[in-house]
Length: 431
Image 1 (tube, rainbow, N blue to C red):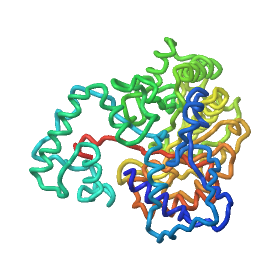
Image 2: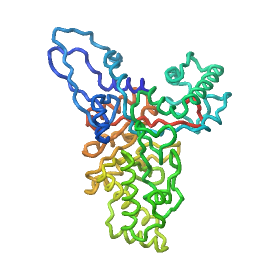
Image 3: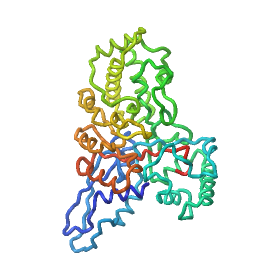
Image 4: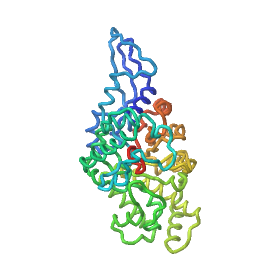
């Protein structure tokens, strides 16, 4: 995957090796220290990431006029630049990295080491993609250049043995192999093997949109269960407050402060799985009345429930911004062939983001998001909007991703963020 991203970036830049006189060439170099705690910013400043993250800065390339170098062809990669990039460790803005578990792999069959995906994969993820062989070679020392069943059975045995030997060091080992220094893990909590500074939890804020659901969840969350009841328990609140004031201070504010204190860099909204991203500004009196009505046993219509959700989204995001927490929002194509893409258009967020309370909250449009990447690009005009290209790295071919990145980098390069959306598919052991 990393090699595919490299190809995309090189295609996007088409950097030239010949500079006719002593002069400087400014080009975008991505880094992600801008959204990190101060200690991380300083540690990462000299290891700024070319493969994506938050603020770009200029790098000076000076070449003496007398030095003549051959011009590269369109598809050729500058070897010196490639070597520099490959030696820089990234900060991955968005992933679903798994913790270690003694049960992991127990359902993997040696007779079907590739497994079967839950639904038909796009071309880059299909099991006959030769990129898999490159990945297996880099990770597990795969010695073959084919997909023969006996070779794959041996490969699966090798992977399982390596996982068992590494134990809780496995997640960090994977980061080392991927060239990632720090990863933001989108999950309710971090798990075994992730309890160190290289793994930063990005918890789901969605349960706070639905105060009255108790232990019920409106959607499945990657990485474990999340509900308002669990957040209340963690906030040490025994019963749901009777007023919107109480809910905001005892649940929302207390939860955000606890997350911030624990080192959480951002919160995540996954709401597009169950509703549109059209969160509209709502006056507080209306929201307080609807909260009180529901608390007193009244039923809210679908429109009234949406109104309360809209208010809570803006309130949560504004409070997060005040605390210095970034807000991640899933945008664009989602999990499964019947995901409603229309409700995940990032443009639907503009009414909320344009409202005054959110002007000081930083947002990252996760996945950027194809097929709405031009809308995401236009939204980067807003000074508090960033976009990562997580998932596009495996949904799109390098050529297609290069086209997306070229547009973004020619627009607002300082707002482009690297993310992988790395995840494990239990149905495909070698993915």
